View: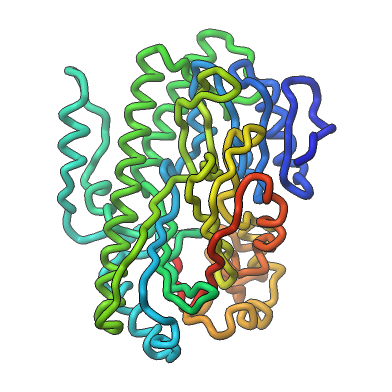
Length: 404
């Protein structure tokens, strides 16, 4: 951990990141000068620029919540399951491909892909029953009900892995899908309007806040918690499909411990002797003895870790490797042969064509390499930078992966 000296005024910034990019540093400076942030700003080793707040950032707010400090994918997180299956049983690339193809039949993957019919879940009714009398919010809509149990796009993944003892693990990265985005956008817009009415002295409109003790703040917290429950259920359902798929190939497989956690959320916690709304945006809770998951990039190792409860990070750690280049930059600058080499021995769907929204003139032949391993920081360096926050327990190597 080191102090960031380039921050102008405000509360201190502490960083576990080797080098904070200028745009992310500007965002950290805004947070350091925000009227509701307290103690210091913590930047995890996977820190990179986000919307309003750096991804890989942790802040403590006094009696307030900042929707964009949680982010649009509320409840994005990880689920991992340890099995008793020896990886040598899945040595064949054909067997691994069969499992992942079966997963794809059961789990819609990619932006805009959902189940054809609405999914039943008691959580929908429990949420609606808990609402006060009066107008109901626009969620959960039919799309939210169809999205339950789907992967989404971007950096979300379903991965077959092996630990260093040769045992198979299952891992999934996903969140609350479109539901979280709607909730985040709705309350950010409300916060902006209120902050303008109050003439709030905030350093960026992207960091509009809601006091936690007013109606709008309480409604955001309520709906954020609904999105967290939805995200947990979303991952649980996909993991059940993954278990079913691998059971068809590994007939005697048993599923042992399971970990299901968030890394985009806010929670009321006690730190330094006082209650704060701790916002973790692309950061994992790492309280003493708490099990966490830090995934690598596509094709690189992931880690199951044990939290050390370091107060300086608000008992948090990184949520992954962290990007070292933007999506468009990666697809324009990376070499496809190098990306294929980084995925050697791993079952995956080959690179798709570059999305038109990132294209520049003359880029028609480009492939989307935005999720390739070279687009991300070195996970080993990330882990090494936070050994005062976590203890690595299990190192996992990928065998096969489905990307959104």
